[in-house]
Image (cartoon, rainbow, N blue to C red; front, side):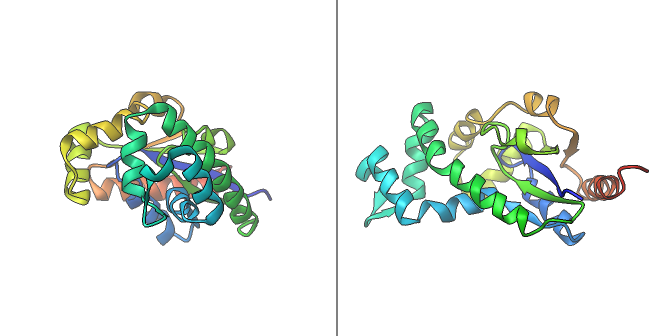
Length: 197
């Protein structure tokens, strides 16, 4: 039996991490691609490549500075593309090893903010997109990160529009009521465990 890879994504503030944790409580292994990308950022080889592309502007005390890198790439699509070209192939290799260590399960979940934007959705057997109204998402991120509204809107502008993601998704979970979200998660979990029913 081949383990299926189910992509889990959603725009910033949609609550995809909340949905991921619900799947984990049901015993499904979840790979947090964004967390792995952050770890990879600090490896020596990646730091060297970042220095070549971004120079000292991306560093504090010879260490990659995520806030500085974010400021550099969020307003410059070419710099964002260069950053992704350094990070994404390494995350993909790490993920393949992780899946190998979880084989013979009905499915695992790959949680990633830019699953569609990076093209990683093409390697998934199905995709779940978590949505929420834009104002709700902005409020959540401002409360969570202490971010300014304008900064949240800039980050949103670098992600695909909800409609575009929904059109390519197999499952859509609207994250407004946690009770409803939980029911949707259980329904998807049951279907993926017993697809022939």
